[in-house]
Length: 535
Ligand code: FBP
Image (cartoon, rainbow, N blue to C red; front, side, top):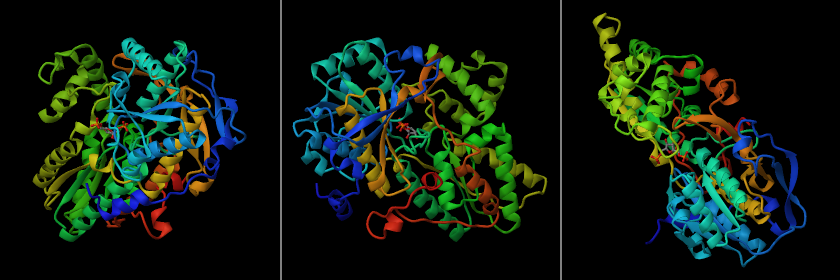
């Protein structure tokens, strides 16, 4: 199939690489201090609980023998995935041209079913710098049951895998640690490394500055939001309610708000901190609509993070109870669940419109998470705001016109061609994972630091996965999982929003950043998101 000119040019485009990755047989990981794994987590990971942090430094490589390595995409798509595989492939081949990279098909289930292809230069020639995970596909199968772990070990031994790389989010990297532990326990030589992927931006800490894909997704959503803002101020007749992907944490909504300056944006973590209830949220929207109407403005734009409802205390209580109930009882549905809920949760459930009740009962994902992408929070807010405004009309507090339009920007952000930043970052992450595997370091997540600066100066680390974990209640049981990094309400990113947002409410300071640029002025192409700028 003939590609369009932009994609053809992207396939040919060279990217800047960290200097450290130029001579891969002249670099080696040096152990730093031992990472601290929380005490409650250690019993689950006896073999990988006391690993040191690793830093890649110039030093003659100890082992440059050929390796057989498997790679898998796990979970939702994120821009830059193909470049991780490119970096992984190139680094393995540079160290030893006889090394082989196998891509397991359709996510972690590809490992269990031994479905794979060998990654070749010809295959990469068709995918580098392009969005999507379509080179090998992805999936959400979790390898965790004793049978699955046994099968994964059998396949790893059968294929003689020296390494296995999981490109995934928090839950998938938790799985990488489970596999690393299991392989060690069962005398399987396969070293397991993770790569921090997710547009949600909730896999980060002092070492992992950002997960890949966040930068591109936010810039793409900001382009779309910017266009809506321009439409709103041109037509002056609609209220746009835009739900933004990002599961629990509100990083995407926060970043897009800073890039576009809408009239109102909700941040889930702030809602939780202030214990804001649903009716306070509706008041805030309705008050804004009334005030803007008094200024002759019957239009506006509201951003709503996908995970908002998970932070509203009554929703959270209801959701926690539903999670436990649904883990043990498959026959529950929106009609019969009330009787199983606590009084408080039941009262709240019964207040909700029936479509939202149905959506809350949908199957959880294999990791036990509610599928927030499927819950139409934006429509719920529209419905409740309209009712509140009707009351305001009756009591003669409001005389305007409320024409709301719902939008959901989600899946369209996950497979865009990666920004120049994400393209370089993912290549470096892939190469970092290759060097971890080559040196037989298992139970690590690949990490690239210094991301605010130029790619040539980036540093490469290995972070023990267990040091990122805590205990959470999932599927009705306590589990050791990687802790999601939520928006910090005392952090610089949120403080920047706090400082600016009051002026956006009534006056319009809309900003339409336009599309992502891949060629041309470096200031535009190489620009970073606010999380990295403020780091
Ligand atoms: P990952 O955490 O696997 O990267 O997925 C994130 C995400 O894109 C969320 O933002 C969204 O809620 C979810 O995936 C949607 O899942 P699905 O692709 O299964 O519909």
